[in-house]
Length: 117
Image (cartoon, rainbow, N blue to C red; front, side):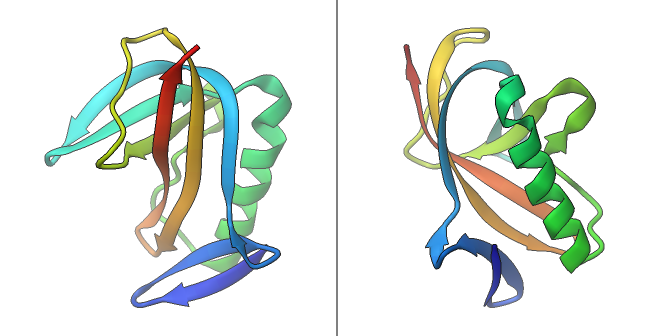
């Protein structure tokens, strides 16, 4: 993974490409914060080490106040992209997410597609 500076924040790439993941999951929770929609995705057991590794890497780059990786619950908080809508809770979905950016406040993942399976 490499850190790429973009304005006041940083992002991550892998072999020069943005980090994007596609996996089957379900929507655990849908929330709204200051007019922005977020989903909590249940992360499959076989992917927990991927999210832990990325979280650890970001934390080594910068002290952060917020992490969207809720390790104990195997949940990942993702901001819904403007073109993405959340399906009903507990619906099986194919999720496509990409790593957003990080700064001292924390970092984010963006949900770009959530299709019911």
